[in-house]
Length: 465
Image (cartoon, rainbow, N blue to C red; front, side, top):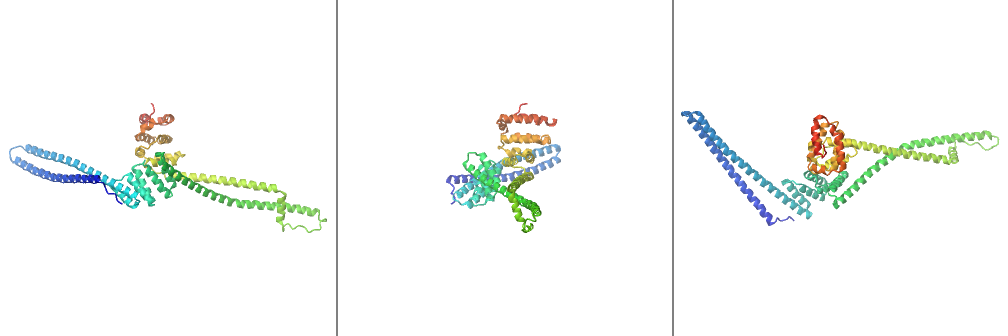
């Protein structure tokens, strides 16, 4: 059921409408006055031309006529300029009132959408939030519409709206939380975990965010284990297939050796006791398995030791194959990450990408280089932390000698980030000592063309000269 606006709200809206109507009437009257002034100026111009022609016929010098014409035209232009100046200010005032009126309408639509949401009329709420966004787009309106989309299981639209909300306010916790939910339902568990983790960092005492982060992290870890176990199972199967032919060859060789040795002993026995034995000789070719069994019975320890060695060898080969598979997977992941590095648009995107490339300074250098130095203040806004500042300084030091000019531009733009001086003041003593060491050992060894810039920047980074 739609909420009926209060009497105070109706009176306020009527007051705004009346003021807007008065301004529009004033605007029309000014336009009419403008036409009148222009017609008067045109008449004065014609009068000036008549005076000029009269002066040409008279004995008065032409210079006086020109002076009169210039005086008339300059006075008319001055009056017209003053009128246009006043008209521009009035027009600006009118547009400001229109903007305020649009904002009031947008807020009313948002509140109406909230009422629909409370009564579980999610489609009607989405319509209200959409009208509010058209009138005046805000992070709250986008996030509220995303929540309504989640209720009707339109998860892709919910993710998109949360992203729009974060583009307007990159520290809006509800937008991170709701985008985490949408991405979990879309199967994007890694991105969902990152959103929940960032929301928890912004508000560590939020129990709902804690619970959400624990749940999505457990799902993500379960997915990773499933992938790893699947890869290991495939590797084991390949190893077993490659080991079977070798085992069969070893068994056949052992059988042949056992048969040959047994036949040799039987031949010797037959030669020495041919006259004594009246029984027929043993046909070796007809019963090789009996001989093999007897030989194995004669040496049980040897066969057990051989089987044990084979098992150890198989386990070692399996371990090496799994390690090799993991190394290949890691190298492949790094190569793909290097290809897919894109410039971040917010502090959240930068920090997530930066942490994802932790352990590989070369990839972090690539991420920093695809980020324009001039864009750093707009990206970080109020979200730059002391650990991130120190990590960026370490990263800049790695390529300072290779590309000094680019490194200096990064060092110049970091102090333009809001609250930079406060971050420098809050650095721990160990961080300050490390920053001073980096500056003395790396940044101070720059070329002469950047020496003055680096000297001035040293003070901004809180380091003594």
